[in-house]
Image (cartoon, rainbow, N blue to C red):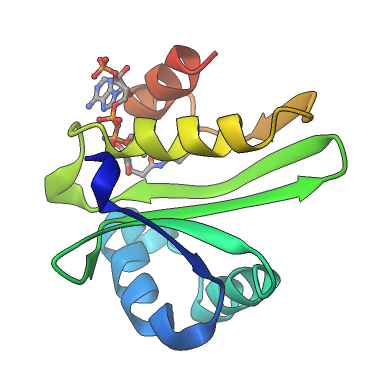
Length: 123
Ligand SMILES: CC(C)(COP(=O)(O)OP(=O)(O)OC[C@H]1O[C@@H](n2cnc3c(N)ncnc32)[C@H](O)[C@@H]1OP(=O)(O)O)[C@@H](O)C(=O)NCCC(=O)NCCS
């Protein structure tokens, strides 16, 4: 699975595909397209980790680092590829990259057990 991860500069070339994936994963709770646009542009000079297979983007990872803090804003995996290790790879890669970070903040619904388990597994 590791070889599926790409790191690319944030830009708008993937916006439509990311928006379609966001809608597929989060349905009526999806971010609107402009929120995704802002996040992709936020990564302008840094790399965004993307899991891709055969040219298809399988995951949405949006994180923000603020000095010693990090905020997980949006994390999702293509529905039919959930439970395949992808979310874990993304989160681990991200946490490994930011060893200087002392706190990670996120919001999760109390009945979203797959996400809660994932976050707990990652400590
Ligand atoms: C939450 C989400 C990102 C996890 O990604 P994933 O690729 O499916 O997760 P992984 O396969 O890497 O699983 C990692 C761990 O997460 C937990 N997990 C994942 N799916 C789970 C499920 N359906 N039920 C219970 N635990 C689950 C498990 O602890 C798992 O570890 P294990 O396989 O050793 O038991 C994915 O399910 C998803 O996109 N959900 C919809 C969007 C969402 O809710 N995002 C989070 C918003 S806070």
